[in-house]
Image (cartoon, rainbow, N blue to C red; front, top):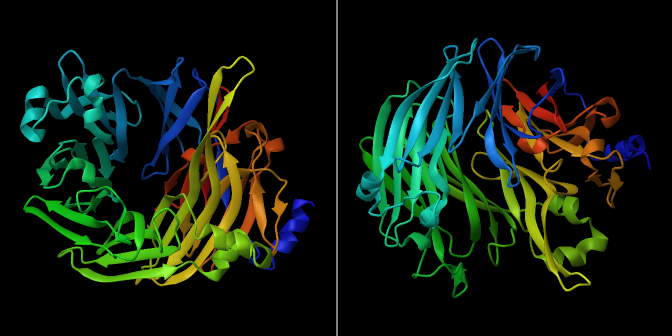
Length: 523
């Protein structure tokens, strides 16, 4: 059945598409390297854009450097530089007073130390100069963390927690940023945070140690307040000296929220013994502090609903908490109705939910956009007896829901899709006004499901159409094709799109081998 016919069927549950969308494309240019990914798209006060794309090369696809490009408001290229790297890489970036500022991590092997630099350039010439912000030698690693972590890329790499050896997070207004170190200490969970303002002046630094074995604490997320640089970070503490998620049918963990500033630190813990929460997302808005997540009734691997915790940003006192089951509409979106009741019952919840974006609306509502993401590994034996292993990355259904400020569920919707690989999978989302928008790559062969539902189908990158899906304030879904693959010399990588909430724009990079194009979408 053609897309037009499916669209008519879909209108029974959707509003007619009415939102204005404008698109500006750059000229197609050729990169010297084939593999690049968009990391940052920064807009100055005049509407001009700086894009920063990483590029990789070699057998192991190692990071080789960055393309930094300056475009005018019509995406005409004004200036371009290649920023080569060795053991350094860009952690974050922002524009202020006509200058581009990079926050750079640099490992100096010969000196056995790590350094964080501010790297700045005027927008008109992109000639960079560096200034050291902080550095760690072997000696002050011992002082701060009670252990030696050198060489960083040698045998002791396992001592570094996840990838948080210097995570850099900017406040929403770009007035402050925090550098967060999370290191392993067998006896105590240990963090070191440094907060700077946008003039690269250090506001404070704090060492945070929690009296719990490192293996019994899972760091979750961090945010920094744009008013004074106060840091909030969230983690999960396991109980009874065990990482088991359940003990005697109850949750064997609680969540802990820390507030850190120049005066000291506070912390609060919270849990619900009968609800199993795999992870929470920290939300820090103006005069608003909250944590939102998905919960399961029986275990944390199957989600049955959404939860919200509202806290006082000054005292950390819990103001209210609410657990709400997924709506019948959401379950019908996902599984259909009558013929899929057995499947719905068997699943006992939704699995593999991965957060993609959490946003506070003007009226205090919270919109959560997520995706079903999971990995499967297949092992097979050839006729000669050789074993081969194949890893497949799955990017399945889009999950979107809206809560009122107290955690009541206004609507929850599931958008069916099934994608694998990284080339043209996943999506970029942005809230604008009362609606949420999703940009995806898919085939024109949109599949009709029961209950007047549809599923967006994957196609290969060369034949990817760019679609926009919207969900309005009432939860009604609509969709529209923005770019047909027949009219485009590149496909657009929605998995590394960059959003600008203030300007209500989305920036995507288009790729086909070394051909590259920048696309800006304004809603």
